[in-house]
Image (tube, rainbow, N blue to C red; front, side, top):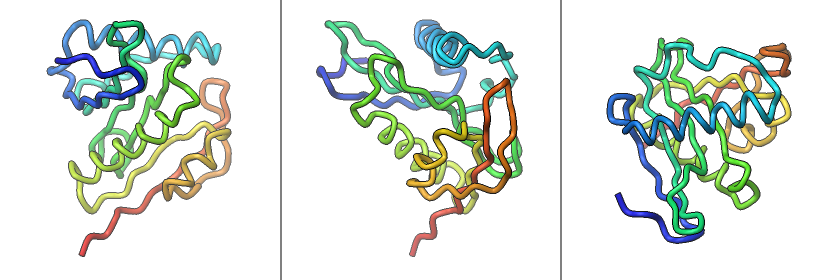
Length: 163
């Protein structure tokens, strides 16, 4: 795999079994950094859903080294919700502020719709990101609730119709 040019993102989809040990380590390290350390949230990241998920990794070149800059996982309908789901959405501290989060979600939605055409996408979004997800067509479908001491809302994006 080639290292992306500085400022460019190399997008990579992998099943769990396709992840190399180094890729898996990078994913788990960033999930721990963002969700546990930054958000000061103790929770069990190992929920059993990674094994059957598709994983989107966004790589960038940082000082000549390929580093994970963004990540999400895509779950098939029925894995977590009746609908398909995107989750564990993150951008690394170093990559924030340049639009990579928008690009990540665009890539995730496109892939999800190709993998499971005609299915809605449901997410459990942190409430402070509600407007961000709404800009992609997600609509809030629940009252705010607490999950791991963080306020969340459930949001749904209807399937894209193609002519």
